[in-house]
Length: 269
Image 1 (tube, one colour):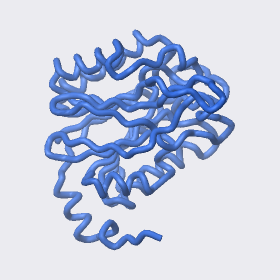
Image 2 (cartoon, rainbow, N blue to C red):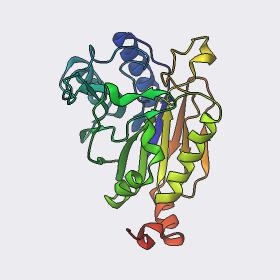
Image 3 (cartoon, rainbow, N blue to C red):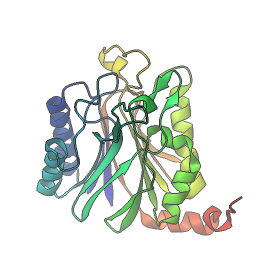
C-alpha cells in the first residue's frame, strides 16, 4: 500500500488550512498514494483559540474532508477539534480528534494523553479520550495516536494487539532543546516496541518559513518519518514543509514478528 505523509504548517484560518489539506491530498493522490496522513491541529494551529471552532464530525469542516476523500478515493487522516463536555468547574472544553475517512473508512480517535508538560497545559481546554482506535484499509490495519501519546508505549501496544501493523502518529510537536531528537527517538522506539511501521507526521517548523512561535504553544518541529518495524528510518523530512511517499510491505511486519516476537513474549504486571 502506497502512503503519503504531508508535513505542513497550519495557521489560524480554517478555510486556509482546508485549502492546504486539499492541495496536499491532491498531490498525494497524483503520487499514487492510497492513504495520506496530515498532522495534528490541521483544522487550526495551536496558539489560537479552539473553543470557538470545534465542530462535530458531521460539521462543515469534517464534511468537506470526507467529501474530498470520497472524490479522490483516498483515505485521509487529519487532526481537528470536536466539542467536548465541560470540566467539573463548568469550563468548556474540546476534544483533540483525528478524523480518518475515505473508501471503507469513517472513524475518529480522541487524543488520550494530554500535553501537560514543558509549560503547556492542554487539559485546561481539552477533554481526554478514553479508547484506542484502529481501522482497516488496503489490506492493513492502522492504529491511531496523537503527539504526546507517542511517549506512552501501552497505547501503541494496544493498537498492535487489536491487529495494527501500522501505527499513525499525527503531531504538532513542541519546540525546544532536544525536542526534535526526542520526537525522532520516540517514533523509532514505538516501532520496535510493537514491530509495526510508524508513520510519524508532524507540523513543519514555522521558523523555517519566518513565522514566530506563539509562547509555549506546540506549533511543530518537522522531522516527519516513516519507520520500519525494526526502528529503521526509511524516509524522513527535516523542518520544512514537504511530502513523503512510501510503499508499505505487510510482509516486513510478519518477518519482524517472526524474528522479534515482543508482542507474543510480553507480560502484564
